[in-house]
Length: 149
Image 1 (cartoon, one colour):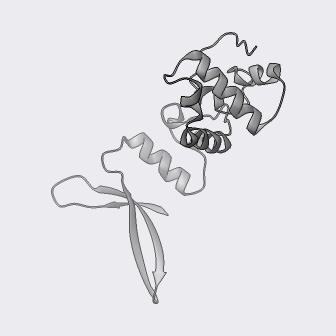
Image 2: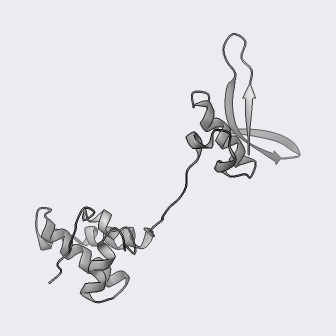
Protein backbone atom coordinates (compact mmCIF):
# COMPACT_ATOMS: atom_id res chain seq x y z
CA UNK A 1 0.00 0.00 0.00
CA UNK A 2 1.10 3.53 -0.65
CA UNK A 3 -0.29 7.04 -0.90
CA UNK A 4 -0.20 8.68 -4.30
CA UNK A 5 -0.91 12.29 -5.27
CA UNK A 6 -2.45 12.37 -8.76
CA UNK A 7 -2.21 15.83 -10.36
CA UNK A 8 -5.36 17.46 -11.73
CA UNK A 9 -5.35 20.20 -14.37
CA UNK A 10 -7.06 23.10 -12.68
CA UNK A 11 -7.64 21.85 -9.15
CA UNK A 12 -5.52 20.50 -6.35
CA UNK A 13 -4.08 16.98 -6.66
CA UNK A 14 -6.17 13.95 -5.77
CA UNK A 15 -4.65 12.03 -2.84
CA UNK A 16 -5.33 8.30 -3.02
CA UNK A 17 -4.51 5.30 -0.85
CA UNK A 18 -3.57 2.59 -3.33
CA UNK A 19 -2.55 -1.04 -3.48
CA UNK A 20 -0.26 -2.38 -6.19
CA UNK A 21 -0.48 -6.01 -7.35
CA UNK A 22 0.39 -8.25 -10.31
CA UNK A 23 -2.19 -10.09 -12.34
CA UNK A 24 -1.40 -12.11 -15.48
CA UNK A 25 2.10 -10.65 -15.58
CA UNK A 26 0.87 -7.04 -15.50
CA UNK A 27 1.10 -4.50 -12.70
CA UNK A 28 -2.28 -3.13 -11.59
CA UNK A 29 -3.27 -0.41 -9.13
CA UNK A 30 -6.38 -0.55 -6.98
CA UNK A 31 -7.60 2.56 -5.17
CA UNK A 32 -8.61 1.73 -1.60
CA UNK A 33 -9.54 5.22 -0.38
CA UNK A 34 -9.80 8.77 -1.67
CA UNK A 35 -8.16 11.01 0.92
CA UNK A 36 -8.37 14.29 -1.01
CA UNK A 37 -10.67 16.00 1.48
CA UNK A 38 -8.87 14.73 4.57
CA UNK A 39 -6.86 17.22 6.70
CA UNK A 40 -3.15 17.35 5.80
CA UNK A 41 -1.97 16.19 9.25
CA UNK A 42 -4.07 13.02 9.01
CA UNK A 43 -2.84 12.29 5.46
CA UNK A 44 0.77 12.70 6.63
CA UNK A 45 0.11 10.43 9.60
CA UNK A 46 -1.36 7.81 7.26
CA UNK A 47 1.65 8.18 4.95
CA UNK A 48 3.99 7.39 7.85
CA UNK A 49 1.82 4.47 9.01
CA UNK A 50 1.75 2.95 5.52
CA UNK A 51 5.56 3.13 5.38
CA UNK A 52 5.75 1.14 8.62
CA UNK A 53 6.34 3.94 11.11
CA UNK A 54 4.26 4.97 14.07
CA UNK A 55 1.92 7.93 14.36
CA UNK A 56 4.02 9.48 17.11
CA UNK A 57 6.81 9.98 14.55
CA UNK A 58 4.59 12.24 12.48
CA UNK A 59 5.42 15.94 12.36
CA UNK A 60 2.98 17.75 14.63
CA UNK A 61 2.16 14.43 16.31
CA UNK A 62 0.15 16.31 18.94
CA UNK A 63 -2.57 16.72 16.30
CA UNK A 64 -2.38 13.37 14.49
CA UNK A 65 -0.89 11.19 17.25
CA UNK A 66 -2.87 8.97 19.57
CA UNK A 67 -2.08 6.58 22.34
CA UNK A 68 -4.03 3.44 23.14
CA UNK A 69 -4.46 3.44 26.90
CA UNK A 70 -6.67 0.39 27.27
CA UNK A 71 -8.39 -2.11 25.03
CA UNK A 72 -11.09 -4.50 26.22
CA UNK A 73 -12.06 -7.79 24.53
CA UNK A 74 -15.46 -7.65 22.83
CA UNK A 75 -16.04 -10.63 20.51
CA UNK A 76 -17.19 -13.13 23.10
CA UNK A 77 -19.53 -10.54 24.65
CA UNK A 78 -21.08 -9.79 21.24
CA UNK A 79 -21.56 -13.51 20.50
CA UNK A 80 -23.29 -14.28 23.81
CA UNK A 81 -25.39 -11.08 23.74
CA UNK A 82 -26.47 -11.82 20.15
CA UNK A 83 -27.51 -15.35 21.07
CA UNK A 84 -29.33 -14.07 24.14
CA UNK A 85 -31.29 -11.57 22.02
CA UNK A 86 -32.11 -14.17 19.36
CA UNK A 87 -33.50 -16.49 22.03
CA UNK A 88 -35.51 -13.63 23.49
CA UNK A 89 -34.21 -14.24 26.98
CA UNK A 90 -33.87 -10.53 27.70
CA UNK A 91 -37.54 -10.00 26.79
CA UNK A 92 -38.53 -12.91 29.04
CA UNK A 93 -36.84 -11.20 31.98
CA UNK A 94 -38.65 -7.92 31.35
CA UNK A 95 -40.46 -6.60 28.29
CA UNK A 96 -38.86 -3.16 28.51
CA UNK A 97 -35.26 -2.26 29.14
CA UNK A 98 -34.58 -1.18 32.72
CA UNK A 99 -31.62 -1.19 35.11
CA UNK A 100 -32.69 -4.43 36.79
CA UNK A 101 -33.03 -6.23 33.45
CA UNK A 102 -29.63 -4.94 32.36
CA UNK A 103 -28.05 -6.22 35.58
CA UNK A 104 -29.65 -9.67 35.22
CA UNK A 105 -28.57 -9.91 31.57
CA UNK A 106 -25.05 -8.84 32.56
CA UNK A 107 -24.95 -11.52 35.27
CA UNK A 108 -26.10 -14.22 32.82
CA UNK A 109 -23.61 -13.20 30.14
CA UNK A 110 -20.77 -12.91 32.67
CA UNK A 111 -21.57 -16.37 34.05
CA UNK A 112 -21.43 -17.85 30.52
CA UNK A 113 -18.24 -16.02 29.52
CA UNK A 114 -16.25 -16.42 32.73
CA UNK A 115 -18.01 -18.15 35.65
CA UNK A 116 -17.06 -16.29 38.83
CA UNK A 117 -18.68 -15.12 42.04
CA UNK A 118 -21.17 -12.26 42.13
CA UNK A 119 -18.53 -10.03 43.72
CA UNK A 120 -16.05 -10.75 40.91
CA UNK A 121 -18.78 -10.11 38.33
CA UNK A 122 -19.64 -6.79 40.00
CA UNK A 123 -15.96 -5.79 39.95
CA UNK A 124 -15.74 -6.82 36.31
CA UNK A 125 -18.59 -4.46 35.43
CA UNK A 126 -16.93 -1.40 36.95
CA UNK A 127 -15.08 0.79 34.48
CA UNK A 128 -11.74 0.71 36.33
CA UNK A 129 -11.62 -3.08 36.67
CA UNK A 130 -13.65 -4.18 33.63
CA UNK A 131 -12.69 -7.52 32.08
CA UNK A 132 -14.63 -6.95 28.83
CA UNK A 133 -17.07 -4.57 27.14
CA UNK A 134 -20.01 -6.23 28.92
CA UNK A 135 -20.92 -3.22 31.09
CA UNK A 136 -20.89 -0.94 28.06
CA UNK A 137 -23.05 -3.33 26.03
CA UNK A 138 -25.58 -3.62 28.86
CA UNK A 139 -25.68 0.13 29.43
CA UNK A 140 -24.09 -0.11 32.87
CA UNK A 141 -21.17 2.23 32.23
CA UNK A 142 -21.88 5.07 34.66
CA UNK A 143 -22.56 3.02 37.74
CA UNK A 144 -20.74 3.72 40.99
CA UNK A 145 -21.73 0.60 42.90
CA UNK A 146 -23.30 -2.58 41.63
CA UNK A 147 -25.48 -4.75 43.83
CA UNK A 148 -26.02 -8.19 42.37
CA UNK A 149 -27.88 -9.74 45.28
